[in-house]
Length: 502
Image (cartoon, rainbow, N blue to C red; front, side):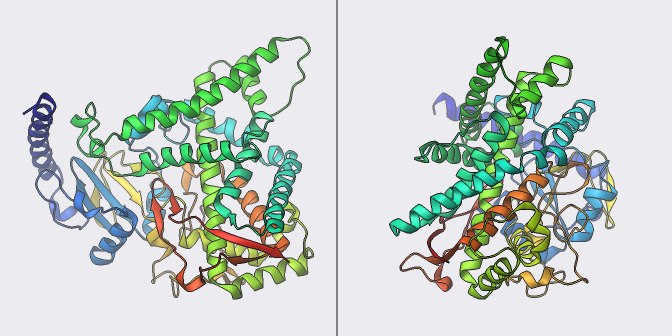
């Protein structure tokens, strides 16, 4: 037996002892009858085999069997999964103080990202400072309004690129086109440059890198369930995540230092972009922002802002091509309100209720974050008659909530009409827990306002400027709608659609 095998055996032996001690202590602290119900765990590994390759689907099936709140033992990690709007409200709003912090996947600690990331930092004075900077000075209403012309230019560029594909009789990779637009929008807003070149080669590289981060952070990792395996990294997840994070951080580091050098010159003219704003804050209040804070903030902004936007546009287009009647209604509304062949302006969104309903219905069926980001119980607390133990991981199964037949009529049917009418004013801002793609409570996604604007502009303009059909050989009833699982849900087979003159 080689040295590595011996080490693995020793680690598992030690983990077994630790697990037995953990189970014994846990059984004394909380009677089994007080825990949420769930499948009986196996010795040592617990319920790991219950996760499968699509945990959001596996855990939805378990909730249908055991109820809207279930518990699993994933190695040494106690995990509670809630799958109803009522219980999501308990976790995210009523008891937000207890559940405001996160369990940290090992992959998110690559390159010390968890030490700087707004998304993963514990609630603290530092977290509140970063959140205030993000909400007021980076993505506040006045900042977004001031940048509306930039968004219009990028959406027009998307229309121009699609028009070139139409003239050439070529199909458009919808997800990649949306990703390129989102990437250049963010990079212009942040750095005053386009990071995606005209050939889309750099866009392809960024997309692979950003998805790599999402995939590694989201996939089940033995290290998270058996911490003693951390140094071994048996699945190579931390190693790959480190590579993806390092590549991304190095790009931002180079841009930041180029800007710092430019600012030293006496002839520098401020761009008033996001980078200048952050560097100004760093110079005035050194305790609030420094270079690592800035680098990792950009990682969060670009990885989440591009992947989530492009995935939602792709899922929406896929559903519309599978439902021609819905597509026709959307195009009729756009034609009536703004006129065929025009870009959707931000001021138009409020006058396009059916387009808004399509976005909401896409969020319901295809939430980009199927579990949101994990929460961590800060104390023993009773929820729905059961006890969630201190330090337990808590997952909100948004994917299950969106397909719950007790909440939604015909939940598997793509039907935007369910969001129309005065009696149904559900929105996505964290007030209605039937639909929380951006989360809720104090840790609701700060990028929500920008995402909502971009989604309506991009999807509405694509629908209003072109008619669409699937590639030859692909039909609505045979389209592959399988998901690719990571921290976010992507379409497993990219959507390729052929634009036609509208």
